[in-house]
Length: 451
Image (cartoon, rainbow, N blue to C red; front, side, top):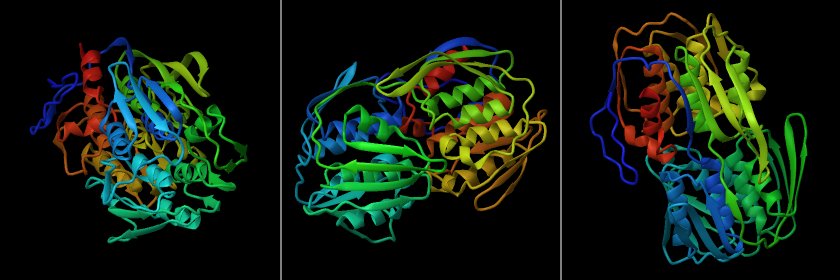
C-alpha cells in the first residue's frame, strides 16, 4: 500500500487505496491533530471576543477552514500562520452582514448548527448552505429552539439546508429542553444566549461540554448544575469578554482510530501525546476497557479547563463482548464505528441500543457500520436504533471488500482502513480525500506506523 499526501496540498486520488496485508507489530509515539470540536468553538467564540485571539495547534482541516472562511465573510479578520491562527474582532454584535450573504458550512454539522446561533441577532437575511452530506441532515433540532428567541427561518426541504436565517434585534431569553444528547444543539442555543439580554435556561441531556468549559474559561456568566441524566445550564447574556489565547489539545475522536488499530494489531504498543480526555468524550476508553482493552493515561493535567493526558495502548489478545450501557452513548457517539469493529473480534455477542443519533451524522453510520461488518463475514441484527454483533475472534476475510458510496463520510473511510489493517483480506477503499474534513494527517500517521 502506498498513500500519497503532501504537507499543504492534496493529491486528488480518483483510484481507490488498495490494502492487501495486515499491519506489522509496532512500538511508536505519535502526535494527533488538534481537537476539531475545540478548534471550531474557539473560532466562533474568538469572533465574539473584543480584540485579538490566538489559537495554537488549531486543526487545519476542511471543517475548520470552512469556519474561518465563514467568519471572514462576516467581516472578521482572520490570519492563519504556520504556528497559530489569529482572529481579531470588535466583540459581540460586530458581524457585518452583506446583502445576499451566503455562508458555506461544507461538511461540518458543528459549524452549520453553531453559527446559526450567532446569526439570530441580525435582521439581515443570511443563507446557510452545505455539501451533499450536510444537506441531508436535520436542522430542526436548532431551528425550533432558535425560533423561540425570536428568529425566523426559510427552507425548501423540511428543516434541511439550504436555510435562510432572519434574525431580530429584540431577542428574548428562553427555556429549552435538549433531550437528544446533542452538544451541537445545546451549543447553538448557548451561542444565541451569549448576546441575548436576560437569563437563558437550558436543561440538557448529557453530552460533550466543551462550550460550557470555554464559557467558564472566558468568565462568561454561566452556571452549570450536573444532575444524574441532565445538566441545568443558566447563561446571562450581554457580557463582553476579551480576546484570548488558547492551545488546543489533540483530538480524542481522531486518536480513537489509532487506539483501536493498536488494540487489534499483534504485539504492538502506542503512545499518543497530549490528548483531550474530557470526561464527556472518553466513552470509547471506558467501553473498550470493559471489553478487556489495555489502555492507560499518563502525564495528566488541566489546560484551559480541559483535561489532557498521554494515552498508552497495548495490543489485547482476548476481547470480551459487551452489553453497552446506554448512558455511555453520548460520550462515544463519534467512535461507535470503531467500537463495532472491536466487537466483531470479541468472543461472543455484543449489543448496543438507543443509537438512532448515529444515523443523523455525516452518513447513516449505524446502517453503514452494520453493512461493513456484514461484508467482513460478521453477522449482525439491526433495528432503527440498535445493533447486535456476533463476534468472531478468528475472522478471516476471503472476498474482495469495496467501501464506496457512503456520502464520503471521513469516519467510514478511516474505520474501513483500520479494519483492513487489522482484520486482513483484500480491500479497496474509495474517497480517501474525505479525511480532509477532520483528520488531514491520518494517512501520514498510518504510514509512520507501517515503517
